[in-house]
Image 1 (tube, one colour):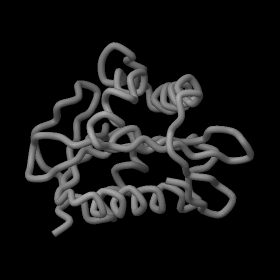
Image 2 (cartoon, one colour):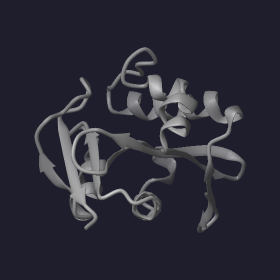
Image 3 (cartoon, rainbow, N blue to C red):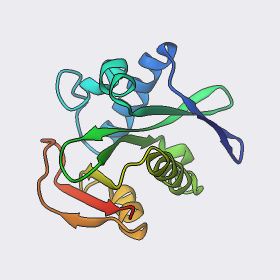
Length: 160
């Protein structure tokens, strides 16, 4: 993946991005009063190779003027049919409200469909109001079965 949105570069994660990606995610979580959990809910950021690359998923980073400003990822899961979970979709507050989140979500959906997956799951916390609004306005339906402790909402969308 290498794509541009305005003057943002969306590209595949590289090993050298590990610390910066973790910092972005940790910072955004703290904005909402949520904790960074490197041994729990955020272990996948510390172990991108195992969680994403080795399973048929993808992990992307977003750069602006050589600074990492966001992330977005997905990997296959066993709930649902031919399903993936979109994970680690975070943008720094300085780049929110520019349409970047919607564009990133559309690009993730296109990549997921291209790989033959049929269902997308997303978990989030209701305090992340922008994320909730984004998912609900893009066809994601609230359902049950939250698996991540800091999340209280789970959404699903069918690509068929």
